[in-house]
Image (cartoon, rainbow, N blue to C red; front, side, top):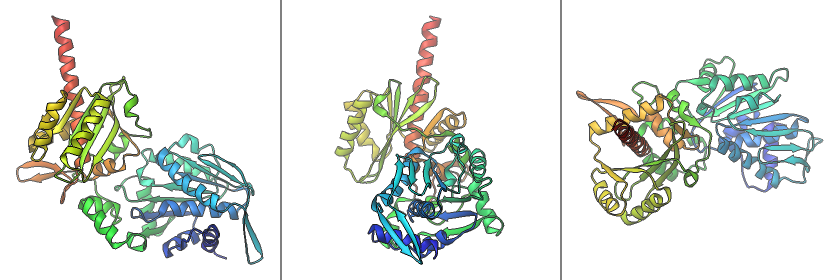
Length: 435
């Protein structure tokens, strides 16, 4: 009996009403030791590896399956899917071909650990090579493998867990640039060498309707769409923020904006009427790092609603400075805000000013001063596709096509606010010291 048929029996027994797609069956039945899965967003990749890990644990007594995610939040989400399946399958017995499969005993479980009655265990881990090295595994699944910062450390840790056990490794991800372990494995698979390749396009996932596709397409610029949905590995050419630079800034932490005593700086990029406005707040830590503590997107809200939300945030965060986009339709919002809060500084974003914002942000990232939470996927994606583009004699910046760089500009304004405010403080300190 094929492994995918056992997986389908589990889904049927759980009463979930889910039928596996053809690509899911092919993946689950692929017994290759090394597999790479290149996928569009939202096709069901995390659910599929959770289901397969559970199936393999049921079929192989005393086995260990590791599910490794690039962030703590993502690892919790993947494990939540698995525990939901287990909860639906308590005390279920499946008989097939003389064999009886039982999932009636869970010996031990926590938010990241599950041990079955047959001695098998499933462990969900965030991006920590040292923690991974402590295991010997029969099955390892690396979710969103293209997002990992420490590729070499991750690769060594994962591969060594399978030593002496003939363990299997599966890398799953949307493309994240022509770099790192995931891209190397993809190229190897294209040459039909060590890795088995599965390409999962959104058209192969019927739960993503045509209406969903068109709605998503409107929210993403062409480069974002190519990367997130069309399975294209983007070149680094003309990238304002190379992916290695972005990943060097990413850290796995949970922002707690209302618990900081550090100076806070806010950047606001106003969208057009009934379009998105993005708010970003950074704190300056004792190590002189600029750490993102909040991002907020305001979509489909009129000016008065946006104004009320922004004022509430200013009152709760008490920022040292708020730099806001004072361009076009941002002018009336800026004027209303400046009458109600004293920390507001308007910035008219011309081509020269935008270049200054981007250069300041780039310097903060390249010097290691900026810290980005791993959960900020939309920001990371926009940074990834942000480009330096030649416009005649001038060098411009943007995402290309229908530009969606609101998260980038909001962050750039916040970093610029921190930079300028810090310079003013330092200048005042030098003046009074000299005086």
